[in-house]
Image (cartoon, rainbow, N blue to C red; front, side):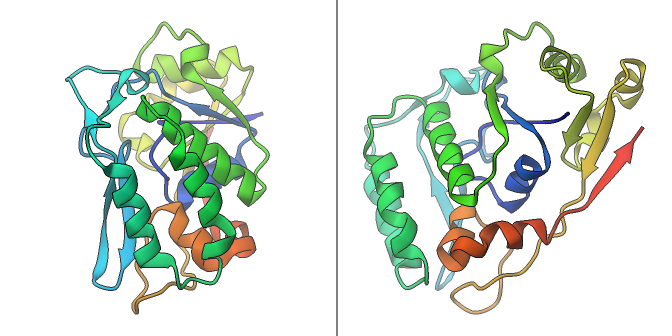
Length: 232
């Protein structure tokens, strides 16, 4: 059984969803520390003048866990997001297929960034037809940190293969995984090109850029970039 573990980012890019499709279980690591200026409360969309950040404002204190972090609802972020998505994508082929459903998610009363992100991720998984089981790390009562936490999650969910992003090579203690009988597969995602508005193709946009432009073909596009290497 393959398991992948990732922070519940805001509208993640294509490679995130390829790991979900490749694995049997997705663990959303909502109990880990929030990382400022990363992808946990922002991501990229493409407009006529290039890409820009779509950001959810948060009330952040150093050391906050992602599932403790509150959205700053004193700001008009929902209106800004909806207006930006309409401006950038209203002419896209599949905009009308997905946008009303996205608005319904935005209309809910969100207090915590993790809950908002998780709802969006589950929505995208469903639209893509990805069947992996979704588990929250906060439900598993993990006692360790770092590599030990990842191994603990694998053991609790009875997984023998851990699917990591390519950056895992920089920090994972591979020998510890081997000692526990766990195989690591490192993703080396080769970002595919797809139909995109506004001229030259820009990779690493949020998943909505793909959905609005490719619709039902999106999962095939995602899988075109699939490449994994095993570390036994």
